[in-house]
Length: 424
Image 1: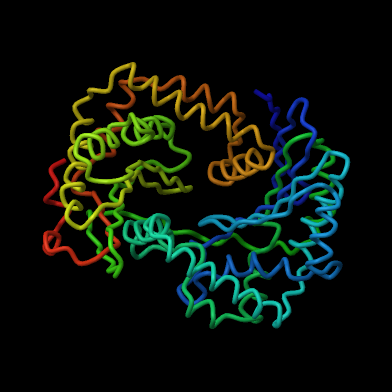
Image 2 (image 1 turned 90 degrees about the vertical axis):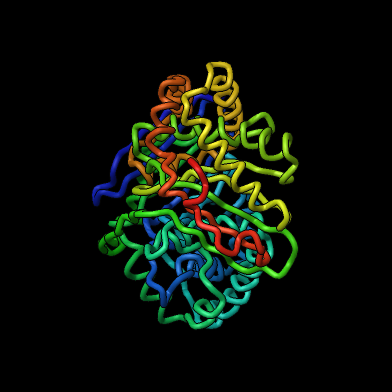
């Protein structure tokens, strides 16, 4: 396992610069993250963060999109970006000896985009196709629908892509205004990972980002779930896709790791409780799994599955039964150890990649402002006990807060369904 050393400093204007130097690494990754995402959008510009992320790649004051691609590939690297609920990030990973190319292009994209009307119109066509692709993949789309149901009335329920109609209506004016307001010193953070030098990363940030406008951070409203709800979104095709879960601990909560272990015991892997009871013992679904979605001030722990309309109500009730059973504190050491090793193995494998490690460094820092090494993360996992799981289960699994979202045909047995009928 490659050992990393993390440093965190700030530029003269206060921009955080976080580096993780990896022993023996022969690649270098650089990222500029902007503290704005889909939860920072009003209804009339839903999807703008994502559209802007696409559009800045079209052209800068110094490069065309083809020139960016040509330079990056010539440096043996990869250039990419992503939009999340709470951040938008631009990054590149190259060979160590060509890292100047990565830094130059990432800074150029963030600081010098042209945002021409014709380029935005072209990119809107691509984004609209992406929205369609997501909606045509129900196993992925159910996550968006569940979040929308769970956080109804709060911007955290917005998916990153927005809707076709809203994206079509946006143009150069909206993107330029949003860019000017959000791409500012107060919202920037810089990350470097791999064969990198903290002093070099600091100089890069100060040269390119410190001259940008100061700006202001957008104030966010923490969502509150007062009661569980059921939401059925009609889908014409066969099969029902279901997400059912509960509000949980945000990313900086001291029990966030225990929550992850509890979720793994419930539904990670084919030996998990959910898989064994819902699929293996009753054959109600093809797959079933648990997922925790942690944000800076709110989170959810949920179970996702798909089934036929004949099986969907029994599957929902069986998932509820698994939740109920774990409240009796019956998790044994062997079961916890298995789940812990499963999560640790997945974490370590992901961290073998400089790009994945850069992404994790940025996401964890932006959510908690406490960057954590892999060794520290693994130590937190090792510290979780069966008593911790029992305590967290008692705190999180509350039947009156259970939210259920179904994406599928109208099902006769579900016509008068309410989460309150599930005994937890």
